[in-house]
Image 1: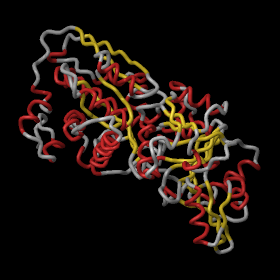
Image 2 (image 1 turned 90 degrees about the vertical axis):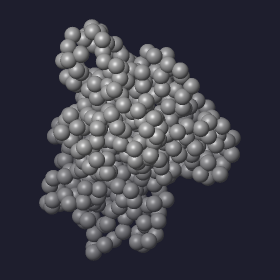
Image 3 (image 1 turned 120 degrees about the vertical axis):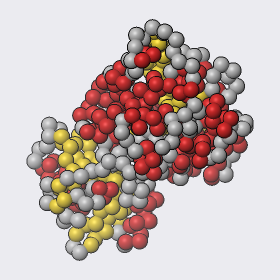
Image 4 (image 1 turned 90 degrees about the horizontal axis):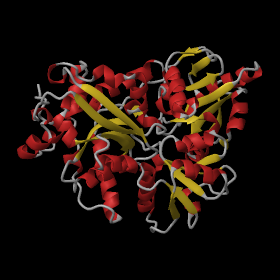
Length: 484
């Protein structure tokens, strides 16, 4: 059994013993000396849907209070928790640097900037202690244009005004896309705008495009005035959000850090046990539509909720740092030294969970059950679909054709579908059916319908199968011609 003071992640990376002793052995810190009050701040991004189980869910369900230590050296301690909500990561880092926040949740690029910024802080460093949620393919960030825009590809925006929250995960996506394509720094007219400002300006056609992080590349099309032209999957790099902590606080109160991470684990379980109910409550708490919350956090959702710090995500953080270094925005930063999975490992241990098994897994929880339209059991969840029926809840279906056939039948019965969900055939990423591109071919007298996130993928599939690329409306008509 690995001692709690040892940091297995750094051990695997052959970190020196001296560093491990000073930076990892949090529980070797001095005990609390008859303290009666502990105050700490947690910086959250409530409208960033893939961070809700590290913030607003814990706050509203009072999960942290459930796990905070109350015996031993903490027996007479009164806790004060200051929850502070922000719209992006950089202000969270500012609050942490000012020692007003001890914990902070943010996206991959701002996390790396946070760690780098703290390198020069003599009072404290920061450490990555957990992941909130991730998409291993990079979906979540995206670029949208107005629905009436003539632009359909990122290259169409050359010389155009593209707004993005500077310092955000979406900003990092744009910078990486430009580097990957060999475009100069002035390819776009990049301007910094918050999600709220950028969304309003796009709706009013004051800018040509807006790049943003979760949930805006899905939220703005859902609200009817935007269309996605670039998805983070096209960078071929994961996107994720995580949690950092000030080391001075963590070393002084390691049990509090573990308590917070136990609350994160329970928050994830709470969502998975009743994803529809969770989406409805999160919508009330954050103002993000329940249908949008569900596409990210529901079964097979765009984001996988998992606090383990996976090697793929650490490697991505190193790539983020390299991108920023090439742009002259960062000097040397040792990502591996910044990662500390000690606390989350202890949280797993205290809850009787297997950290190593979860660390190796990229599995999400999936759509399951019986297809009431095609009368079959769902056996391939990433080929399935779901319909959120007003007044009836969410029902699963076994394929895209069965889902669209069921939607047509429900509509004919006068029922309303709040949203229909399918999965991208190429990558298994959850989609709004109304925003997908469809490759439709005839197969055994039936319509074989394959939904895609990207138009180029649908075109390739249609060409290969001798079919056509169809819109949502045309695919819906094709589905009524036969069940596939």
